[in-house]
Amino acid sequence: MASTDRPSHQTHYSQKNMLSKPDPNWVRSDDFHASFLIPHDDALERSLKYSVEQGLPEINVHAGQGKLLNLLARTINAKRILEVGTLGGYSTIWFARAVPEDGQVITCELKESFAQVARNNFEYAGVANKVKVLVGPAAETLQTLPSDEKFDLAFIDADKASNLTYFLQAKRLVRRGGVIIVDNVIRNGTVANPDIDDENVRGVRALLAHIKDDKEVDATTIGTVSEKGYDGFLYALYL
Image (cartoon, rainbow, N blue to C red; front, side):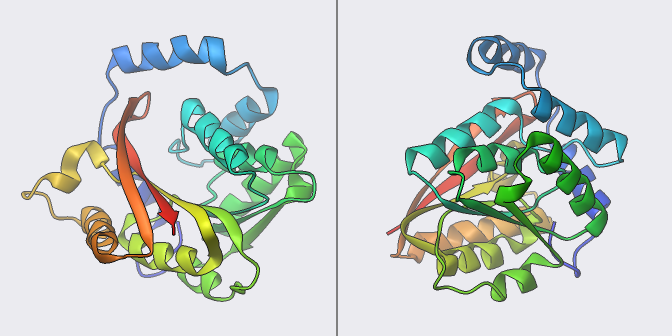
């Protein structure tokens, strides 16, 4: 999360987590495919457990999505990755493992207490040397990052009301030909429902409206069902 003028971390996370109750079939399918494609990983499992023990909400990406993010970063040979919304660092670990030894993941987190949990998880996973956590409102933090040190990929998973702000900053910081991914843009279908109008939905709609007329990016949204429910992500290529 990354904005001081939004509801608290806990309030926003609760709203996000309540959007869709996963179908047991989706959970079973996730588990089945993961049993073949995602080996047990002590560091990742421990990061989830430790985060919960420290009181963080369980709204991290699921294992399949974490693996996808890792694969996408490796596919484009990403060396520098920007993440907006650290939480306990689960997705950050996936990214850190994707970049080379001299690569870097810069991740923005609003709360120092969450950042401390994430740093602990990075140390345990052996990736602390590749990760830099910036604490504070991300809308402000991103403005301090120099545009001459380009990122290959940006992953936005923070307060949805600020999606457009984060996206525009990501465009400034990502190289041409780089990728910007924005999570939670389907929201159980509520974004397309004209009868629903909360700040999270408005944030996604504002982003979509901007991208429609932004000739510098080409993008699509992919809907997903998983152990986390019905949601999806936006994948944008900076032309």
